Length: 272
Ligand SMILES: Nc1ncnc2c1ncn2[C@@H]1O[C@H](COP(=O)(O)OP(=O)(O)OP(=O)(O)O)[C@@H](O)[C@H]1O
Ligand SMILES: [Mg+2]
Image (tube, rainbow, N blue to C red; front, side):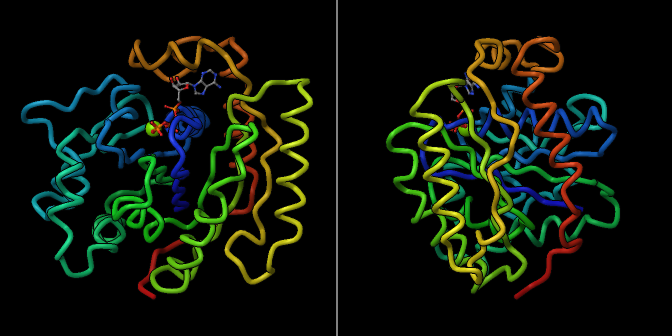
Protein backbone atom coordinates (compact mmCIF):
# COMPACT_ATOMS: atom_id res chain seq x y z
CA UNK A 1 0.00 0.00 0.00
CA UNK A 2 1.47 3.35 -1.05
CA UNK A 3 0.67 6.26 1.18
CA UNK A 4 1.09 9.68 -0.37
CA UNK A 5 1.11 12.92 1.66
CA UNK A 6 0.28 15.89 -0.57
CA UNK A 7 1.97 18.69 1.25
CA UNK A 8 3.11 22.29 1.00
CA UNK A 9 2.75 24.81 3.80
CA UNK A 10 2.10 27.49 1.21
CA UNK A 11 -1.61 28.13 0.64
CA UNK A 12 -3.43 27.83 -2.66
CA UNK A 13 -0.76 25.93 -4.60
CA UNK A 14 -3.00 23.05 -5.71
CA UNK A 15 -2.75 20.52 -2.84
CA UNK A 16 -6.46 19.77 -2.65
CA UNK A 17 -7.01 19.84 -6.41
CA UNK A 18 -4.11 17.40 -6.79
CA UNK A 19 -5.17 15.14 -3.90
CA UNK A 20 -8.73 14.78 -5.14
CA UNK A 21 -7.99 14.38 -8.84
CA UNK A 22 -4.96 12.14 -8.37
CA UNK A 23 -7.01 9.94 -6.02
CA UNK A 24 -9.88 9.90 -8.53
CA UNK A 25 -7.49 9.16 -11.41
CA UNK A 26 -5.99 6.21 -9.55
CA UNK A 27 -9.47 4.96 -8.65
CA UNK A 28 -10.53 5.11 -12.29
CA UNK A 29 -7.51 3.00 -13.14
CA UNK A 30 -8.97 0.28 -10.89
CA UNK A 31 -6.92 1.02 -7.75
CA UNK A 32 -8.64 1.01 -4.37
CA UNK A 33 -7.98 4.45 -2.94
CA UNK A 34 -8.65 6.13 0.40
CA UNK A 35 -8.45 9.92 0.42
CA UNK A 36 -7.93 11.35 3.90
CA UNK A 37 -8.89 14.99 4.33
CA UNK A 38 -6.49 16.45 6.89
CA UNK A 39 -7.47 20.07 6.44
CA UNK A 40 -9.99 21.64 8.84
CA UNK A 41 -11.19 23.66 5.84
CA UNK A 42 -12.65 20.36 4.56
CA UNK A 43 -12.03 21.32 0.94
CA UNK A 44 -11.25 17.80 -0.28
CA UNK A 45 -14.49 16.55 1.30
CA UNK A 46 -16.53 19.32 -0.31
CA UNK A 47 -14.77 18.70 -3.63
CA UNK A 48 -16.12 15.14 -3.56
CA UNK A 49 -19.60 16.31 -2.61
CA UNK A 50 -19.39 15.42 1.10
CA UNK A 51 -20.35 18.15 3.53
CA UNK A 52 -19.49 16.67 6.90
CA UNK A 53 -22.13 18.18 9.17
CA UNK A 54 -24.12 16.78 12.08
CA UNK A 55 -23.67 13.09 12.72
CA UNK A 56 -21.33 12.42 9.79
CA UNK A 57 -18.21 10.80 11.29
CA UNK A 58 -14.97 12.57 10.43
CA UNK A 59 -11.24 12.14 10.79
CA UNK A 60 -11.41 14.33 13.91
CA UNK A 61 -12.92 11.37 15.76
CA UNK A 62 -9.99 9.22 14.69
CA UNK A 63 -7.55 11.77 16.09
CA UNK A 64 -9.41 11.89 19.38
CA UNK A 65 -9.58 8.09 19.64
CA UNK A 66 -13.36 7.86 19.37
CA UNK A 67 -13.56 6.02 16.07
CA UNK A 68 -11.51 3.76 13.85
CA UNK A 69 -10.56 4.85 10.38
CA UNK A 70 -12.89 2.22 8.91
CA UNK A 71 -15.78 3.79 10.83
CA UNK A 72 -15.32 7.24 9.31
CA UNK A 73 -14.45 6.40 5.72
CA UNK A 74 -17.29 6.52 3.20
CA UNK A 75 -17.54 5.53 -0.44
CA UNK A 76 -17.39 8.67 -2.61
CA UNK A 77 -17.39 7.00 -6.02
CA UNK A 78 -16.27 3.69 -7.49
CA UNK A 79 -13.01 2.54 -5.85
CA UNK A 80 -12.62 5.83 -3.99
CA UNK A 81 -13.28 6.20 -0.27
CA UNK A 82 -13.07 9.44 1.68
CA UNK A 83 -12.29 10.09 5.33
CA UNK A 84 -13.88 13.55 5.58
CA UNK A 85 -12.95 16.55 7.70
CA UNK A 86 -14.61 19.70 8.92
CA UNK A 87 -13.77 22.57 11.20
CA UNK A 88 -13.78 20.27 14.26
CA UNK A 89 -10.36 19.16 13.11
CA UNK A 90 -8.95 22.57 14.05
CA UNK A 91 -9.75 21.68 17.66
CA UNK A 92 -7.73 18.47 17.41
CA UNK A 93 -4.56 20.52 17.04
CA UNK A 94 -5.20 22.10 20.45
CA UNK A 95 -6.55 18.97 22.11
CA UNK A 96 -3.49 16.99 21.09
CA UNK A 97 -0.95 19.44 22.49
CA UNK A 98 -0.40 17.34 25.61
CA UNK A 99 -1.22 13.94 24.12
CA UNK A 100 1.50 11.33 24.14
CA UNK A 101 2.51 10.02 20.73
CA UNK A 102 0.41 12.69 19.07
CA UNK A 103 2.53 12.51 15.91
CA UNK A 104 1.75 8.84 15.25
CA UNK A 105 -2.03 8.74 15.71
CA UNK A 106 -2.80 8.55 12.00
CA UNK A 107 -0.08 5.98 11.29
CA UNK A 108 -1.45 3.76 14.07
CA UNK A 109 -5.02 4.23 12.83
CA UNK A 110 -3.94 3.08 9.35
CA UNK A 111 -2.02 0.14 10.80
CA UNK A 112 -4.98 -0.87 12.95
CA UNK A 113 -7.23 -1.41 9.95
CA UNK A 114 -4.68 -2.30 7.32
CA UNK A 115 -5.72 -5.97 7.25
CA UNK A 116 -9.39 -5.20 6.64
CA UNK A 117 -8.79 -2.15 4.48
CA UNK A 118 -7.05 -3.52 1.42
CA UNK A 119 -6.38 -0.12 -0.13
CA UNK A 120 -3.78 0.17 -2.85
CA UNK A 121 -3.27 3.87 -2.19
CA UNK A 122 -3.89 6.29 0.63
CA UNK A 123 -3.73 9.95 -0.39
CA UNK A 124 -3.57 12.57 2.37
CA UNK A 125 -4.53 16.18 1.66
CA UNK A 126 -2.54 18.31 4.12
CA UNK A 127 -3.47 21.74 5.43
CA UNK A 128 -1.31 24.77 4.52
CA UNK A 129 0.76 24.58 7.71
CA UNK A 130 3.40 22.45 9.38
CA UNK A 131 1.34 21.62 12.44
CA UNK A 132 0.61 18.30 14.12
CA UNK A 133 -1.84 17.25 11.37
CA UNK A 134 0.83 17.57 8.69
CA UNK A 135 3.37 15.81 10.91
CA UNK A 136 0.85 12.95 11.27
CA UNK A 137 0.59 12.74 7.48
CA UNK A 138 4.37 12.65 7.12
CA UNK A 139 4.66 9.98 9.79
CA UNK A 140 2.02 7.82 8.11
CA UNK A 141 3.32 8.36 4.55
CA UNK A 142 5.68 6.36 2.42
CA UNK A 143 6.13 9.30 0.09
CA UNK A 144 5.52 13.02 -0.16
CA UNK A 145 4.23 14.88 -3.21
CA UNK A 146 4.74 18.62 -3.26
CA UNK A 147 2.43 20.67 -5.45
CA UNK A 148 4.17 23.86 -6.48
CA UNK A 149 3.04 26.83 -8.47
CA UNK A 150 5.95 28.01 -10.61
CA UNK A 151 6.17 31.68 -9.76
CA UNK A 152 8.88 33.87 -8.36
CA UNK A 153 8.35 32.92 -4.70
CA UNK A 154 7.84 29.21 -5.39
CA UNK A 155 11.20 28.09 -4.05
CA UNK A 156 10.87 30.19 -0.93
CA UNK A 157 9.72 28.00 1.90
CA UNK A 158 10.79 24.85 0.12
CA UNK A 159 13.85 24.49 2.37
CA UNK A 160 11.66 24.67 5.47
CA UNK A 161 9.40 22.05 4.00
CA UNK A 162 12.35 19.80 3.19
CA UNK A 163 13.83 20.31 6.69
CA UNK A 164 10.53 19.17 8.18
CA UNK A 165 10.56 15.99 6.10
CA UNK A 166 14.17 15.37 7.17
CA UNK A 167 13.21 15.79 10.82
CA UNK A 168 10.26 13.42 10.54
CA UNK A 169 12.41 10.91 8.68
CA UNK A 170 15.04 11.02 11.43
CA UNK A 171 12.67 10.85 14.37
CA UNK A 172 9.49 9.13 13.27
CA UNK A 173 9.49 7.51 9.84
CA UNK A 174 12.72 6.21 8.38
CA UNK A 175 11.14 5.22 5.08
CA UNK A 176 9.87 8.72 4.29
CA UNK A 177 10.92 10.23 0.99
CA UNK A 178 9.92 13.14 -1.14
CA UNK A 179 8.89 11.36 -4.33
CA UNK A 180 8.18 14.34 -6.47
CA UNK A 181 7.07 17.82 -7.24
CA UNK A 182 3.85 18.43 -9.12
CA UNK A 183 3.88 21.68 -11.06
CA UNK A 184 0.38 23.10 -10.75
CA UNK A 185 -1.34 26.12 -12.29
CA UNK A 186 1.29 25.83 -14.98
CA UNK A 187 1.42 28.54 -17.64
CA UNK A 188 2.67 26.70 -20.71
CA UNK A 189 5.12 28.59 -22.86
CA UNK A 190 6.01 31.28 -20.33
CA UNK A 191 9.61 32.13 -19.63
CA UNK A 192 9.00 32.30 -15.87
CA UNK A 193 7.58 28.77 -15.62
CA UNK A 194 10.54 27.40 -17.59
CA UNK A 195 13.08 29.33 -15.47
CA UNK A 196 11.57 28.18 -12.18
CA UNK A 197 11.49 24.59 -13.43
CA UNK A 198 15.21 24.86 -14.31
CA UNK A 199 16.05 26.33 -10.87
CA UNK A 200 14.14 23.53 -9.20
CA UNK A 201 15.89 20.85 -11.25
CA UNK A 202 19.27 22.32 -10.28
CA UNK A 203 18.26 22.52 -6.62
CA UNK A 204 17.30 18.83 -6.61
CA UNK A 205 20.41 17.74 -8.49
CA UNK A 206 22.66 19.51 -5.99
CA UNK A 207 20.93 18.05 -2.93
CA UNK A 208 22.59 15.86 -0.32
CA UNK A 209 22.22 12.19 -1.42
CA UNK A 210 21.26 11.25 2.16
CA UNK A 211 18.36 13.69 2.26
CA UNK A 212 14.78 12.44 1.94
CA UNK A 213 14.43 14.50 -1.26
CA UNK A 214 17.52 13.07 -2.96
CA UNK A 215 15.34 10.93 -5.25
CA UNK A 216 12.69 13.57 -5.80
CA UNK A 217 11.80 14.37 -9.36
CA UNK A 218 9.62 16.85 -11.08
CA UNK A 219 6.70 14.90 -12.51
CA UNK A 220 6.62 15.31 -16.25
CA UNK A 221 2.85 15.82 -16.16
CA UNK A 222 2.43 19.56 -15.73
CA UNK A 223 -0.98 20.59 -14.44
CA UNK A 224 -1.96 23.46 -16.67
CA UNK A 225 -4.20 26.26 -15.51
CA UNK A 226 -7.71 25.19 -16.47
CA UNK A 227 -10.93 26.83 -15.33
CA UNK A 228 -12.76 23.48 -15.20
CA UNK A 229 -10.45 22.41 -12.35
CA UNK A 230 -11.57 25.48 -10.40
CA UNK A 231 -15.26 24.85 -11.18
CA UNK A 232 -15.39 21.13 -10.35
CA UNK A 233 -15.37 21.50 -6.51
CA UNK A 234 -18.60 23.50 -6.50
CA UNK A 235 -20.29 20.59 -8.28
CA UNK A 236 -18.89 18.10 -5.75
CA UNK A 237 -17.18 16.14 -8.50
CA UNK A 238 -13.69 15.15 -9.52
CA UNK A 239 -12.53 16.53 -12.84
CA UNK A 240 -13.18 13.13 -14.46
CA UNK A 241 -16.88 13.33 -13.64
CA UNK A 242 -17.23 17.07 -14.15
CA UNK A 243 -15.36 17.62 -17.41
CA UNK A 244 -13.64 14.43 -18.56
CA UNK A 245 -12.43 15.93 -21.84
CA UNK A 246 -10.79 19.10 -20.55
CA UNK A 247 -7.03 19.65 -20.30
CA UNK A 248 -7.29 19.41 -16.49
CA UNK A 249 -8.60 15.83 -16.78
CA UNK A 250 -5.90 15.05 -19.33
CA UNK A 251 -3.16 16.39 -17.03
CA UNK A 252 -4.34 14.58 -13.91
CA UNK A 253 -4.80 11.35 -15.86
CA UNK A 254 -1.18 11.75 -16.99
CA UNK A 255 -0.08 12.27 -13.40
CA UNK A 256 -2.03 9.21 -12.19
CA UNK A 257 -0.39 7.11 -14.91
CA UNK A 258 3.04 8.38 -13.94
CA UNK A 259 2.37 7.49 -10.32
CA UNK A 260 1.13 4.03 -11.30
CA UNK A 261 4.27 3.34 -13.30
CA UNK A 262 6.76 4.49 -10.65
CA UNK A 263 8.10 1.61 -8.65
CA UNK A 264 5.95 0.67 -5.71
CA UNK A 265 7.32 2.04 -2.47
CA UNK A 266 7.59 0.37 0.93
CA UNK A 267 4.58 -1.62 2.00
CA UNK A 268 4.02 -1.22 5.72
CA UNK A 269 4.39 1.75 8.02
CA UNK A 270 6.60 0.89 10.98
CA UNK A 271 7.62 2.62 14.15
CA UNK A 272 11.07 4.21 14.04
N1 LIG B 1 -4.65 23.84 -12.53
C1 LIG B 1 -5.56 24.68 -12.06
N2 LIG B 1 -6.23 25.51 -12.91
C2 LIG B 1 -7.14 26.39 -12.44
N3 LIG B 1 -7.44 26.53 -11.14
C3 LIG B 1 -6.82 25.73 -10.25
C4 LIG B 1 -5.86 24.77 -10.65
N4 LIG B 1 -5.39 24.14 -9.55
C5 LIG B 1 -6.03 24.68 -8.50
N5 LIG B 1 -6.90 25.64 -8.91
C6 LIG B 1 -7.74 26.50 -8.08
O1 LIG B 1 -6.87 27.27 -7.27
C7 LIG B 1 -7.37 27.38 -5.94
C8 LIG B 1 -6.36 26.77 -4.97
O2 LIG B 1 -6.23 25.38 -5.27
P1 LIG B 1 -6.27 24.29 -4.10
O3 LIG B 1 -7.46 24.50 -3.23
O4 LIG B 1 -6.11 22.98 -4.73
O5 LIG B 1 -4.95 24.70 -3.33
P2 LIG B 1 -4.49 24.23 -1.87
O6 LIG B 1 -3.01 24.22 -1.90
O7 LIG B 1 -5.18 22.99 -1.48
O8 LIG B 1 -5.04 25.45 -0.98
P3 LIG B 1 -5.02 25.50 0.64
O9 LIG B 1 -3.61 25.83 0.98
O10 LIG B 1 -6.01 26.56 0.99
O11 LIG B 1 -5.42 24.14 1.13
C9 LIG B 1 -8.71 26.67 -5.94
O12 LIG B 1 -9.71 27.61 -6.18
C10 LIG B 1 -8.60 25.71 -7.12
O13 LIG B 1 -9.86 25.38 -7.67
MG1 LIG C 1 -6.27 22.57 0.28
